[in-house]
Amino acid sequence: MHDLVTALNILTSVLFVVLAVVGVRRWRRSRDQAALWIALSFLCLGVIVSVGRLVPSHPDGFGEKTLQRLLIELLVLFPYLVYRFATAFVPPSRRLQRMVATLTVGLSIWTFALPTFPAADEPRPPGFYLYIVAFLVHWAVLSIVVTVRLSRAGRGQPSVSRKRMRMLAFGAAALTVALIGAAFATDKDSGVALAVQILSLAAACAFLLGLEPPQMVRSSWRQPETQRLQEAIRGLMTLATTRAEVAQRVLGPVAGLVGASEAAIYDGEGRLLARQAGPVVNTNAEPVQVEEPGVLLKVWTSPYAPFFGEDELRNLQTVAALTGIALDRVRLFEQEHQSRVALERANELMTNFVALAAHELRTPVTTVYGFVQTLNRLGDRLDRQRQDELRLALEQQTQRMASLVEQLLDLSRLDAEAVEVRPQRFDLRLRLHEVVELAAGTRVTDVRVEVTGARTVSVDPSIVDHIVTNLVTNALRYGQAPVRVIAVADDDQVRIAVEDAGPGVAKEIEETLFERFTRAGVARDRVAGTGLGLAIARAYARAHRGDLRYEPCQPTGARFVVELPTG
Image 1 (cartoon, one colour):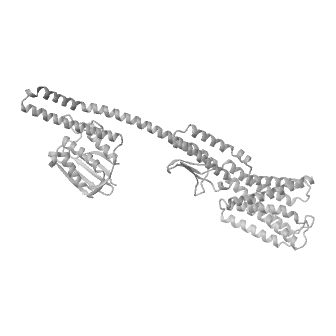
Image 2: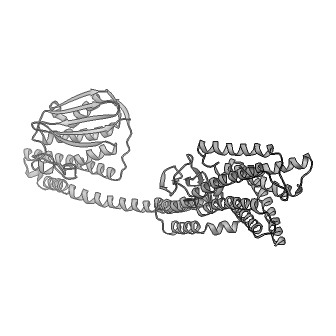
Image 3: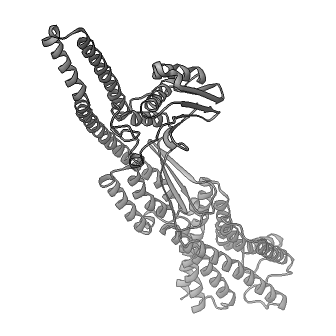
C-alpha cells in the first residue's frame, strides 16, 4: 500500500509540474487574461509539489518556516486563481467578488499570523483546527463557483470546448475532495490516503485534458461537428447551384463548429448571402471575421471560444477558403446560365419583333403597293384631281409606315433594355413648348403649356420628348381641345400631366390601356393608330425609374401623368 501511494504521489506531482509548464507556455502563446490566470494557478501547484519536497516535516529555523508558510499561502491562492480564470470570460456579480476577495485576503493574513503549523505527529491547538476549517471552506466555496460556472458555460458550446470546460470543472471539484480527504487522513498508508492520491491523479489528468488535450483527443471530441461540416462541404461542392444555397448549406455547420450565436456569409463585394442564428445567446459584441478570396465569414462566438475553441476558429480559415471556391464555381455557372438566357431572350425579342413588324406593316405596305401599281398602270388615264388624291394618300401611308417603323424600333430597344438614361439640366418650359410645337403641328393653338416649380430640371430630355410627344398626339387624336400640358418640378422629381376635354377612356379598356395594340378613347375604331404609343411611353418612363398612369378628368376627359425622378 505504501509503495502504491508513493508511486501515485510521484506521478501526480510530475503531472502538476507538467501542467505548470503547459500553462506558462499557453500564456506565452496567447497573452490573454484567462491564460494568465490559469498559468498562475498551475504554476502554484507546480511550485508546491516540487519545492514542497524540500521542506522537512519538522521545519526548523526562520528560512524553513517562512518557506513552509509561503507554500501554504500558494495553496490558499490556488483556488482563488482558478476562480479568477473561470470568471475572466464573464465577470461575476460584485457581491460574489467582494465575498471571494474577503475570504482570500482574510485567510492569507491568517496564514502568516498563525503562531505555528504543527506536524502530523504533534498536538494541534483549537486555533489551528479553526484555521483548517476556514481553509477547507475557502477551497470548497471557490471550487463550487468554478465548477458551476464552467459546467453551465459549456452548455451549447461545441463538443471540444464543452468537454474541456467540464474537465477543468471536474478537476477543480476532484482536487477539493482530495484536499478535504487529506486533511482527515492521519495514516499515510491507509485506504483514505490511497483514495486521496487517486483523486489527485484524476484531477491532474482532468486539468491536463482541459488545458491542452492531445490532438487525437480533440479530433475524437470534435467528430460530430466535423461530420456535419464534411457533409455540408460535400453538398456545397456537388449539390449547391446558387450562391445563396452555398452559403446556407455551410452556415449551420460553421455556427455549430465554433458554438456561434450568429453567423453570416458575404460575397467578395460585401453583399450578404446568408445569415443564421445559433443556439447560444451572443455575449460578444465584435464578430470573428475570416476573409478569403470571394468570401467573408463572420461568426459571433461566446467569450469562451477564443480560449477553448482556438482550433475550431483556425478551422474557419479552411472552411472560408472552400466556401470561396464553391461560390466561384457557382458564379461561373450563373454567368454561363445568364449568357444562355440572354441569348434566348435576344432570339425571342428578334422573333417577336419580326412578327410584330410583319403584322403592323402589312396594311400600309399593301396600301402603298396598290397606290403605286395604280399610278404606274392607270396614271395616264386618271385626271389631275385623281392623281393628286392618290399621291396625297400615298404620302400619308408612307408617313404612317415611317412612324410605325420608328415605334417598332423604340419597342425593340426598350424590350432589350438598351435605352441609356442620360440626365441633363435644361429649361423645362422651353423644352415642352418645342415638343408641343412639333407634336401638334398645325393644331399647336389647341395645346396650352403650364409649368410651375423649378424652371431648370435634371432628367433625360430625349425621354421627356418621347413621352410628351406620344401623350400630346394621343390627346389630339382621341380627345378634344383644349389640351393642357401641366408640369410641376421640384428637387426630387418632375411631374408632367397631359389632359384633354374629350370623352375619356372607355371603361372596358382601362385595365389594358398600357398594353400593346390597345387603342385609347371611344373613337378608336374610326381614328388611325397602332395602339403602341402608350406602351412605349410607359416603358420609357420606367426606364427612367419613373412611371406613367391614367386618371379620368372631371366631368369628362382623360389625364395621363408621368413622374420622373431628377438627378
